[in-house]
Length: 132
Image (cartoon, rainbow, N blue to C red):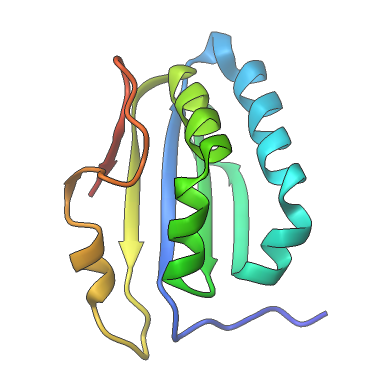
């Protein structure tokens, strides 16, 4: 299987800062999230990477979706909103989202997701999501 080279779709990097004492809870719930959607993700994404950063409590998700309509629809589902809110409750500070415009394409992704508090992700009372 060859690896995709994506130059015509945005990519997103999510950095989750997991409380050490909630790491097992976070991993268990995140595994349920991606494993329950794995077959669908193969159809609607260009690529997905999930792993840990240099800091052992920094979880990183890198995704590129085939269309903005698909990712917007996923974000609107109750399951996504509930699960992300629960994952955020296991974090010590806001999740930081980064958007990257495609090499061959416009910069519309930055208009859709301006820097600051996210309008497309759930916010909890303690921790939210910030676009950098």
